[in-house]
Image (cartoon, rainbow, N blue to C red; front, side, top):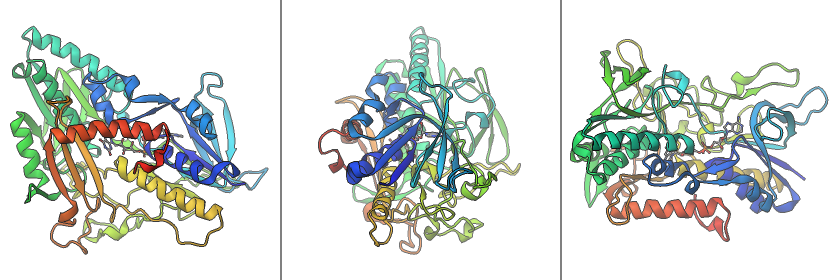
Amino acid sequence: MARVVILGAGVAGHTAALHAKRILGSRHEVIVISPNSNWNWIPSNIWVGVGKMRQEQVLFPLAPLYRRKKIEFHQGFATEIHPEGGSESERPFVVVKSTHPDSIDQVEQIEYDYLINCTGPKLNFAATEGLGPEGHSLSVCTASHAVEAAENLKVAIDKLKQSQPQRFVVGTGHGTCTCEGAAFEYTFNLDHVLREEGVRDQAEVIYLTNEAELGDFGVGGLTFTQQGFQTTSRLWTESLFREREVRPILGAHCTKIEEGVIHYEQLDGTTHTLDFDFAMLLPPFKGADLKAYNRTGEDISDQIFNPAGFMKVDGNYAVGSYENWSASDWPKTYQSPVYDNIYAAGIAFAPPHQISVPRTSPNGTIITPAPPRTGMPSGMIAKAVVLTVVDRIQGKKTPPHEAPMSSMGAACIASAGMGFLRGSAASMTMHPVVPDWDTYPETGRDLKGTSGEIGLAGHWMKHILHILFLYKAKARPMWWLIPE
Ligand SMILES: Cc1cc2nc3c(=O)[nH]c(=O)nc-3n(C[C@H](O)[C@H](O)[C@H](O)COP(=O)(O)OP(=O)(O)OC[C@H]3O[C@@H](n4cnc5c(N)ncnc54)[C@H](O)[C@@H]3O)c2cc1C
């Protein structure tokens, strides 16, 4: 009997756990370690954050589902990986600190044969002084953050209704943030709600971003076809912002957030302050707080993780400057080069480099979006890793399954407002996610697989995806037929 241990129960970890158990059945063990009792469909946090959904609609408890599926669940944080075992046994193990109310802070060791690290991002609010719900700005990265954002939005709308003008700032809270798509979605949902409430004329909406130009989205922008014509995500996004009277501030790195004031530096090296009444600013991401030790107890974390705490896998991490970057640097199998029974999927794997052009201000401040690893690639990578692990457990001599972001297409539907008849969403597809200039010398991507459309149909699709992905995550009948 083999034991597969999965760290994290988000998009990648939960996908990995369900597929692993479905294929391996009762002859092998699947164990999930994750700190939260609930699963969260994070994309719909945007709608919670503008008061259009309740948090119960984006959360469900994991323990009953895992009991039903015979997946062992340990509610806690993995804190250490011991890939060579310890003084008593050579069997690898992880150290877990419980977050379950009945055993809070208790520490246990869980042995594994295969380890899949799906710990996603640590929300690094500490990178910018005063950033985040414990500081002076709001977030929608978790369901509870989104609830708080919605409460604050309601207060701001009430003030607008009393003819008190309000300034809303939405965007990224650090020069190295990723997930600009989420900030874009929140901006447009905010605009939509303000219009619905009849108070948009009293409100100023500002999009403050680390992107050097609109439409970069951390993927270096896109050239795509729209209604048969070729355009760029920059032109497309600029016109969406103009139509909605949202003022962008580009190439910005927030240095400090005070009560009602954002301090930021821009790519030209100038520094500014911006007063606000309401600010939803995303944090930068880093890897989970995980350490690794060898058999003798020596700290080997720097062999396993990059300096930001993401797990190094089969990517080329020695490419140096931008001129040397290539699509082939990107990982394919997501296997650790140091321990062949460890893999990382989703945001937990270390990207070899950015996708957007790297930029630094004259003061040496890095202001460039980090590469996004959105839901679809995270799920597809997790499934590929599981299929490889299953093959190895079953003794198959087949090559590992591959899911490189440099040949993978992805779809992203960015909500621009909720409503059965008045809703809207920007539907974008890109192929591949990481541009491949050798195969597609003109634009880096296949124009046939790269597109952008905005409209009500996109909103319906986004809402259908909300229903489908929750159905799938709850492992309802035939769930595995729904693609990642
Ligand atoms: C507001 C918002 C909106 C988004 N909208 C979209 C969208 O519309 N479309 C899209 O494709 N993507 C979207 N994304 C991105 C998407 O949510 C991520 O790509 C996806 O969640 C990444 O999956 P993951 O499994 O790597 O990380 P996560 O889903 O974050 O899961 C990580 C898991 O690891 C757990 N964990 C953390 N530390 C430890 C530890 N030490 N030990 C054990 N477990 C640990 C966490 O609790 C969590 O369960 C959005 C993101 C945000 C923030």
